Image (cartoon, rainbow, N blue to C red):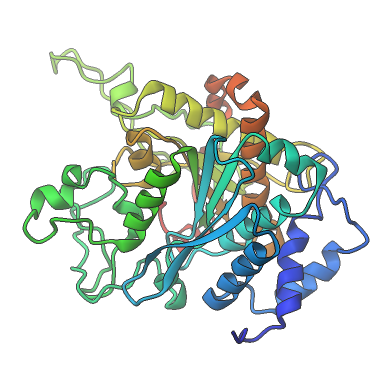
Length: 419
């Protein structure tokens, strides 16, 4: 297979370097420092057109399986509308161990997650002594790139000539008809609006049962079927967003069902509820640029234990990423201003009984590509290691209140769109 625009060995060595170059405090600490140098990796990465294309990703995944056939499996879990295979990689030494899972790039124009998750797989096959405690206790399943077609365009959506035009009345809070697609007919669907595992409960089916008797988004279906197969304890959904301001002054009221000020039966006695989604358009924030954001399931029907587990994952990842000795500790990770819509992955997976977290790593002006890809790498390893050692379940879930709010964007939050 030909690798376009780059040398294969450099590409593989560059991704592998993510797993071996890091701070003294993180799981990514180098254990073969003589083989890789961050500066060399950065130059290779920037000189090789930024991201791995679909062929390169497939080749690198297959190479990991070929070199580690006893505990690495690469599967085609589905196929896009244009016939591109969607791949997963599973790293497991004991199939009786509980499973954990991560996916990346549901939106085709949000980059650097696939590289970060590929580096996770590379680390877990590296022979590092820290890998043993993970694989003795957990099976790890990764889908580095969900949206193979949208990546090629590139655009947010998948590619589907039969997709309808977006319905502006179907916002992520009200849903209405449940049509989340591109602004032009025949372009594609927004994959991360179709994660209701029970399709008959999705608004699109309820409004158009004859037109859409089944989920029309093959990428979402592939992920759901894989989850049914591996039954992960939890799943992390990695996205990329633009930069924003962290606002320490805005108090987040939470979803309506959880608010103390929600209207009672007597509308005359009810207090005026606070705005649900921060920030106020006129709020300038406090000038603190955020690196990324996280959020757990907010749908009111998600089991409380699932919500708590998801919150424990958020705190575990945030703590690892903002350790003073960690090179990723440049700025803060905030609470993403998401809603309760059930079709979004963190809510849909939570409703299906899985711990579920949205992780938004930021692009914009916040540093080089290595830094952004490394966020996914560090976060996933921190969560997986905590699950394997059991420390995850001792985390105080109430600490999610420590996450600051997102505030106004300094200019490019639209780059990655809204979860």
